[in-house]
Image 1: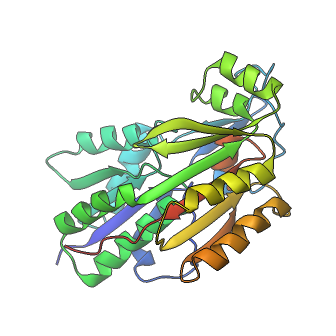
Image 2 (image 1 turned 30 degrees about the horizontal axis):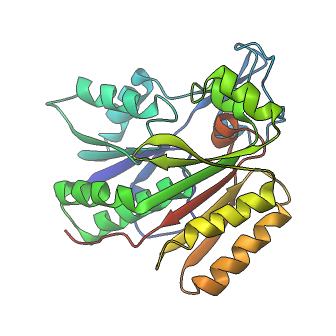
Length: 289
């Protein structure tokens, strides 16, 4: 009998602590670097005292997310093939780091000896986590490898991701924004809202504060007739009070939609800065074979 495993990265948030098929899932982590020191795996660094801006920071001193290398993925594939005959590798958006490309290159090294499908989820956080969770449940259902891969790829466009951050210099240091754009944006003291659209980080709105960001999120959600899940990810602790508007709107307008809230994990904080807010909206996944 063919056994199928899933490998994903630690930017994923799983809204449910236990679910069917989670024994098929393995995580691969990032290394964090800060102030010139390697801090080890991100899962061992639960809290990071990140500066609000990286303007003026030297590249080798600024917080940096080091993705799993081609060799890291290759070694993980070899290890997982002791348990699984086939692997689905589902990573966060290829636009945000080289993780997807490294996973793909490692799979190509084993081409012809192992069946590995590498999928760019084009999202992050709870969007990635829920996609991986649904994939694990398809394995439990007994679907074939090719059937599951086709379903996953078909469901990727059903996930919508908005990211709001005042820390544009973090995006600049991660190669997601030019340095002049980051300087001007932070000087204006505005929060920039981005959308991940077809794996591109697209600026869609500038807002003055987090209340206006919540109002923009509500306007965005109002375009949907039905959603299966909405997730809010924040770095702030306690959570921003302005997001109460969003909670109330979802409760009233989407009473049957699952709403979850998550504290940002270290990889996301290093990508987007210490005060970002992320909204994930998911239409019903297509379970058809």
